[in-house]
Length: 342
Image (cartoon, rainbow, N blue to C red; front, side, top):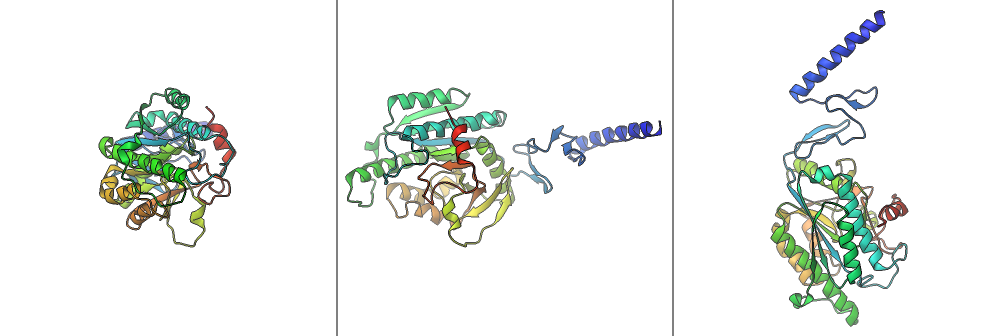
């Protein structure tokens, strides 16, 4: 009987303490079962609140001073060209349309994975397409309509971008493909500058995302931008080529992933409207005039700005398996591929 009375007293005290913590705004952890009595969550749940705080065990709470208001995903698609400057086969050796459609599917699955999050911010997907087949475009639209996403499809007119300069490759077909690619990049920047108000995620059509990718990037942007008091760049891929040298890097805890500072990326990245406007000249230069390497102006920006890459990768860049610019280490490529079936 004595034990029963003691348990009752403990339960009464616990309930009172939980109520007090709710009033004063504190969270507590019951380490016997890793539950959070104040918010009625467990350790596998999302403990953070968008725009308010980021909570990581055992680091505690980070107050959010840089809340996210909106996210525009701008996806550049072209199912008629396999690789712009190469003839190599991609991993899984499928037609280009397969990678494009799986990219779209993976983004929609990532949206649906945490749809409640995207009800709290403005969200839109804009597809800038060049020469994809009609049935591929119809399939893209069908996939998007499996969600409540606001979307737009823009057909690129390359005649609007005749002043783009490419490097001489002694191959008219490759040079024409490169001009079209650069026109698509330039159009994506112009669209972002005109319509976006906060975060922008520029995506190429051979990046297949994990279901948690978008929510991880949004929560991480809020947290790391609040800590650093700066606008950021986030890259979703843990590129293997960045492990080829011994440059110093800083590792931070994001939402549920580790993130490390990098000084290079390819052209799939997230940033803010403020950063787009701040570095508009360099971004225009990259899309108007071909460089070698192509992303050199972007890397110039990273000398003075912070860019983070996740560990492990949040997306799979579907290039040739032997390319150091593609497949990230220590992730299950086949699972990501299968999860993106449409």
